[in-house]
Amino acid sequence: MSKEDIKVLIIEDDPELIMVLSMYLKKYGIDTACAEDPYIGLSMLTQDKFDLIILDLTLPGMDGLEVIDKIRENSNIPIIISSARNDLTDKVIGLEKGADDYMPKPYDPRELVSRIKTILRRTKGGKSIEQKGSFYVDKQGHAIRFKGKTLELTAAEFDILEMLIEHRNSALSREQLLYESEHIDDSSSIKNIDVIVSRIRNKLAKIDSSKSYVKPVRGVGYMLVDEV
Image 1 (cartoon, helix red, strand yellow):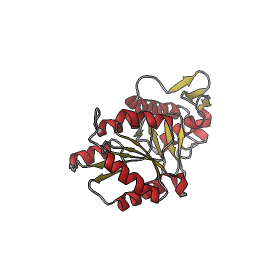
Image 2 (cartoon, helix red, strand yellow; image 1 turned 90 degrees about the vertical axis):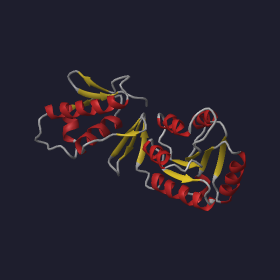
Image 3 (cartoon, helix red, strand yellow; image 1 turned 45 degrees about the vertical axis):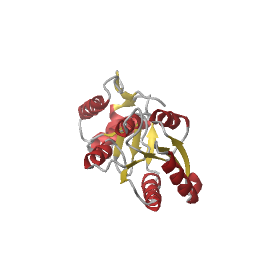
Image 4 (tube, rainbow, N blue to C red; image 1 turned 135 degrees about the vertical axis):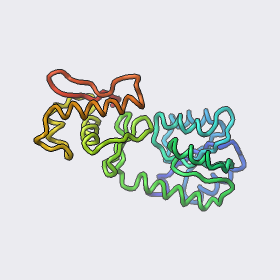
């Protein structure tokens, strides 16, 4: 990743720290955009493309842990928590909610640069993670994130859901799902696909029950209905 590729959003209500971090990161080719208000920061995230977020926890109007929830509803962008709240509970909750790292203040900006580049190498280096509508598919890691949460999938469930996501809004036959899966024996019953799809639908519904994402197509098989 070249220096010019890195753009960071800082959501922090300390203007002096914002200035220090922005000037320091600039020396390493990391461009920054800043928001002292969390609502403004969330709005900026929808209007521009960023590679990473540096997030304070103590913010006006909305706690930083709640901000993580809001971000993860729509984005898998890496988040580094930067907080004076040096509380183990905050750290654990922040990481459980989907933050990638936690840095208690005060810290050396050089360490921040190192952590930013380490996280971006991990998340972008292999380019194995791709956004497909509401889903993030990591083919290399055999993992799928939905609405900011990683689905607990068996190998066969991953195969089926990955195919449905790849061909979203198009019907796939049970036979295609069976024979193109790497982890289902070709001699398995077609009915086995129905069982696997049912488990997938239940796991998706636990995260978002507002609609059914995987729909049966009469006489054919199944279709995943999602944004393009």
